[in-house]
Image 1 (cartoon, rainbow, N blue to C red):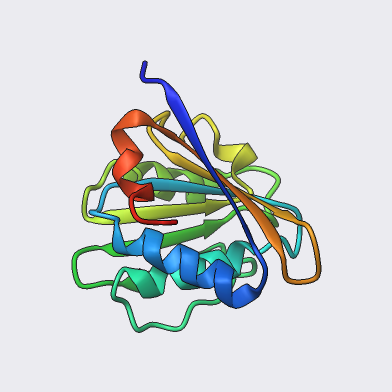
Image 2: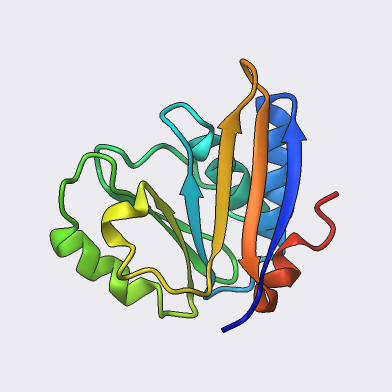
Length: 155
């Protein structure tokens, strides 16, 4: 079991949140699992939009709340974005998630992951987004030491 590190930053606008996420996305290699934690309207889609842009993808990012999952092609891998908000149990989508979290050709992003915590690997980045103003967010990244490369250069 590796130790968990944390990294913290407060952003002052949606643009700053998206730019921070883009820098993080640029550091991804493929095979990472990212859990986004926040209340409704907390910035999960904004963060994902920036992160996907940082991977080199030019696809439009939207919330998968109604479709449950979306995929975005990037030059080195595919970003699989899951949103379990509307589900009371994971069902078949949980099985789909279980397949991609172990696939190095994917980066997996999960919103509202409480119902799939048994599927999520311990080796994941958890992004906690807390609203501190209309557009300001407190962002706390928690990650095992082997994922420290993801936060390099974020300051």
